[in-house]
Length: 474
Picture (cartoon, rainbow, N blue to C red):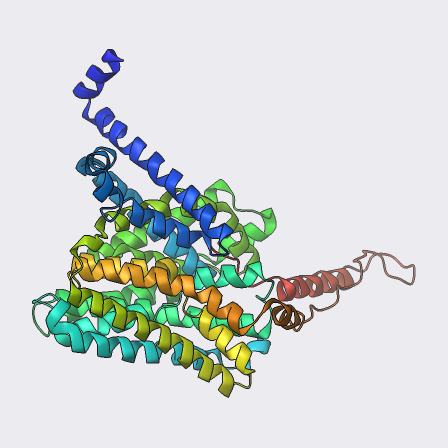
């Protein structure tokens, strides 16, 4: 043991590894335990992981055992954990972007998901912005303008966590019901708008004058256009390769991992944070359902189990409720009420105008309050860019936890189990399976390759139609 200790003292890399590995083990253990508890309580696993991160921070562990916390999470280990969490977030947002369905299925068109998206986004933006405007003097940084702070608070509260919402719907078999499809498409629109909104806001904030942010905004628009209009076409062969192989080969996986990492690096250079690059890289991926399914199955478990909990732990180390003043607490209560009311009533009224029942309307209003880790990422960027203070960050983490925890109870109150089962039975009926393919004409003649090719094409179209478009994300 003494030899190992002396070796660690002489090898700084080994010493760093001996600091990082125990911290990583503690993070994963806490995430596993509290994630399981959340599932037992009927909540998504990610909510328990967020709570685990908070409890590892100064709010609980730092208060009960400050020496132990300092030993488990030394300063030199946090730098490595930060790099790992940044990679994890970039890849996670890449998977979120790759999972968004750009298409508009026929069953969704008459319900106009943009109406639901706008009704959930705009009321929360306005109410949250009003809270920010009124409390700017009491809780904001001095170098952040009143309208910058207000727009940031409103933008944070306007988010709906698409991965959490998708998981809730898939667990109940409602992803293909008209309610489920509409909610998923609306949430994807909300998230995309919110990230673009934050990218613009951070670009404006980092400039010292009115014209300074313009190059950053211009580079951001150029980067997005190149990725979605140019690089996306170069990536289309990946889907054909996955279709032939039935999975993603090692060569394809290298491309799939390198693209978001490079995009994250480029957006960091631009100044709008690497998660935006990962998200845009995901949007540029092929939209083929088989490719998306293979991508999710190969990457999501590793990213969400190993890397994302590190981000929650670092967020928890920044969350210190001991520093929350009375003004900050009042701001948190106002933000909580604004976020809940904006999503709940705004989404419910929109659903009612789309001729859903009041129960279905309020059920969706509850689900749209599931902000999950999306708001945590959002406010982490705000903290790193100097848009908010640490006390405001801490109270907004609590707002994220409470609103996410309230999503399922609000949903169940509006749509009890027996009504939910009836709703699930209203899901669109899959098209009937095509007849078995044969290579011989039914009249007993020889082969008919034309008929066979048409049958194969027909069958593939049917399979793509009935295959779920979105894979559930953790």
